[in-house]
Amino acid sequence: MLVLAWRNLWRHRTRSLGAAVAVGFVVWMSILYFGLVGGTRDGLYVNLTDAVGHVQIHVRDYRDMRDFRQALIPAAGALRARIQAALPGSQVAATLEVPALLSGEDRARGAMLAGLDQPPAIRERFGEKYLTEGRLPGAADLDGIVLGGGLARTLQVGLGDPVYAYAPGTDGTGASAYTVVGILHFPEPAQDARGAILSLPAAQELAAPGAVTRFELHVPEFRRTTDDAGLVPLRDRLQEALGQQVVVETWRETYPALSDLEQALRPIVLMFVGIFFVLTGLLVVNTIYLSVIERTREFGVVIALGARRGRIMRMVLTESLVLCGTGAAVGLALGLPIVARMARGFAYPFDWGDIAEAYGLPRVMYASIAPVEVVIIVAFAIGIGVLAALWPARVAGRLAPVEAMRFVA
Image (cartoon, rainbow, N blue to C red; front, side, top):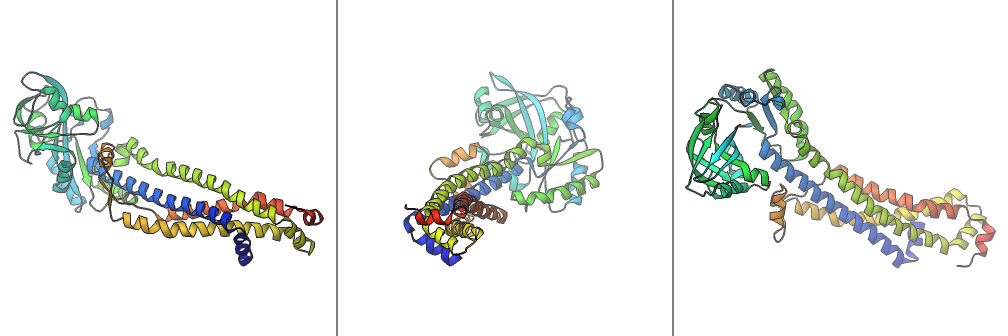
């Protein structure tokens, strides 16, 4: 039946070739689309986890805390040692966020001071991504401060200028003078207008000696969204080791909105791919239906000779599947090698890299497609082949032999 289906399709090779090319193009485009979106998801994942960690540790009920002191984790050094003992392979970052008033010579503005203690690799990537001038404060630097570009413009300060910080009602000195050693550019305007960074010891001296507001765990081997499944057992093991005085959360639990954004990409892709396949299916329906109409007399003779109507319908269905299957095979053969090449890394052309960075994507992307996504694309192609054949097959199966043999196209 396959040989017969191929021969029937080859009778009108131009029309059949056009439909097969359309199916192949949609499969090829879908492979690239899934690969690019997979790379986008992994890029978002890397940037998000670099920024917030794979796992975060806070005081319990920290979301309901309104007082600065209540949100603090005291004796941070001892807790860090327990974290590192429980998960020796992880990288631990500590952050102390202090609401403060920053003042230049003539202007002042409210800001969120962040005292950071980051692992070297995370610190280096942070500087490469956001630092536009100067340097980041050293790990033991008590005098240097880095400002968001918007905040620096508001305060009318630049590198080497003094900045004064006031944090009343805290347990530290409450006020201190710093020197601007770097300027950052954050894509988010609010962060750029209010963000400022100190070393962790400087922030602790200003507001909370020995305390932090959160710990972040970065797991170096987790670089793809598919690695995320390993975070839940890691979180549970760490929670058991640290006790109930703190809460351990994966980044998805801490930032559900960011998690929803990352997870929304695949359904969107499936929707668009589905639309493309439906439009291609209409072309396949037209091709198969015209083939049936042109062979009406032939089908009448075959039925008159004793062929069952089910066999006629299977003949039409086989033709449609051969047509879609051939196109899908060509599309896969052309698309998968391209995705494999892009999986080694590619950059956006022109100035698109700047736009990508503004939306939290890295400049260098790595295409990624999961086996299940290839199966989905093939299933779409087969499904289109079946659905496109239903109506023409029904028409062919209901032909009356005498009327069919009298038919003139």
